Length: 456
Image (cartoon, rainbow, N blue to C red; front, side):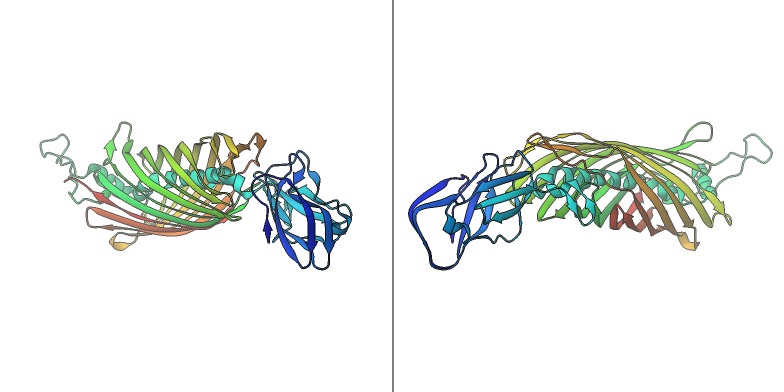
């Protein structure tokens, strides 16, 4: 084995070169200047074997889609050279190239990938997977984490609207005792002081985990694991005018994720802060949540380790209505969630020395859903949830040394699953949920949590 890779493509002149058996050589290739490591000799002899180019490092990118670079002019050596790399594909810091050796002229031929594969044209296949780290991290590690945060922020709203209207009215008037000296014959009806957890202010905690495969539009297929926990507190029900009531919340949390694709591994860790409010009138409800968060990415590629930082913020709204059947024992709840998300990846230089620049990601999500809720004895509340999710204007825009990378996005997907909620006593409510996803995201999302009522 003769390894000439030292970051410089050069010509090495020898007085003599004798090839007696199969030998391996590893070379550097400078596509931009159309040069590569090569041996030349004044005297040469070939008594057996081949000179196998067993590996190469592409130091730069070619100006054209096709580049031919001479390896040897020696007529005897030309026919005794072979390319035996582990793959017919070689990677530059930005692109990938198909490699072929032409024994007729002693040239190596490099053809830039065109993005064509068995599933049609995917532009990301023309690029080195290492240069796509920022795009993948923004779409999956940051944007999808934001979508999960919105869902978790509305979990208290979902807890409350799983109840019947009569239960919510009782919560509103609990502990309001009428005086027998009040107006009206016989005074006003007095409500019993029995409490349920959602009536008063409380604290809550919600861990979650996601296991999925995401086939990015114009991007690679990525295995993603997301996890984290949110904790927060909310007020009790606040009575407003015109029959409206409200609950306000504040929350914070940790989120982490891991993405794997084409030999690249990305770990992200971060946190989020947010507020939310929900307003109720009869069987109608609507809510808003807004949050801001940051995360640090740690990627490992064929070039080594690299770090990048992301800032994410957004706002979401969820609205729905309960149709009660059998005195509230069965509830059909159509609902609609819509969100706007902003993700900014700060410019950085990756492990290959390529400058990665990006424009902020602006994404809109629309997600109509349907929920079927049961109110059973002893506080058990099972439910089935269905939801269709579309992502709009969610294409990431990145550049590598001023070369535009593919604009990736998450295709629409359908999610469905089951959950179970249980009230225990007058302070505790717990729930667990499993949602299966198909389409642009394929996998399962698990979450559980509890709310503990505070105060008297």
